[in-house]
Image (cartoon, rainbow, N blue to C red):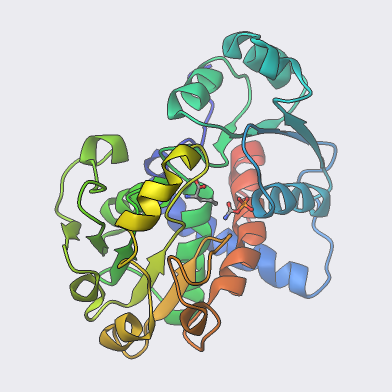
Length: 307
Ligand code: CP
Ligand code: NVA
């Protein structure tokens, strides 16, 4: 089972593999926009396991599989045996005998790691407490579409050092760009949890304005991620000054873009002026989940293709 390629965190792929997947994403997106059918996953099945809510992730994987000629099956913990204590290892054995790929959205990364160790087919991380690699795949593809190569650029991350932040940091190491992180005290990046090798590609700032200075991309996310709802009130108080506003965008580079993985809370982590403003690329970012994940599925299920 060792030879199977999974996508459990951003560093599972090399920079060369990312270059390939971005090239395929471009090709697949352009073909889709021309209404030309492309069915490399004819007769293939993706199983999607959700232990947390989702709009974009479910929709983009499900639509993506259908568009590529395959099908997608939705499972959740409430109405499958997964919520009744069946060992994750047993579930992996069974589910992977009936499918060609599995996408999982769950809590601890350890759950998806254990599933992958017992799976006969590729496993994709659709978000864990620690990482959200499919989203960063879409974000970087979106940056490339709007501004070109991300190498050497600066991303300002404002807010919680959560799954999105950790994944940006892994991406910075792999693709050689910089991340300026500003979190409230007590919510700083934990390099080991982020799965980083070193700290060369990121810098922490106490003041979010300082983090945004000169940045090519300013991005943020909810103050309270799924699974941390009990901390909501404490987080609202702690994060009040970590709201991306017009002043932060004005100190960023003149050509800076704004991104948010969505769903967003206007008036909390970002003002309506910024997310609905001219520098925001959030709708392209959301759409690109579809195109990059189709390229990801193609790569994991059928391997490299030439066309
Ligand atoms: N950005 C994202 O993953 O959205 P969903 O929670 O709607 O899937
Ligand atoms: N950090 C957020 C992202 C949601 C797509 C969460 O984990 O809830």
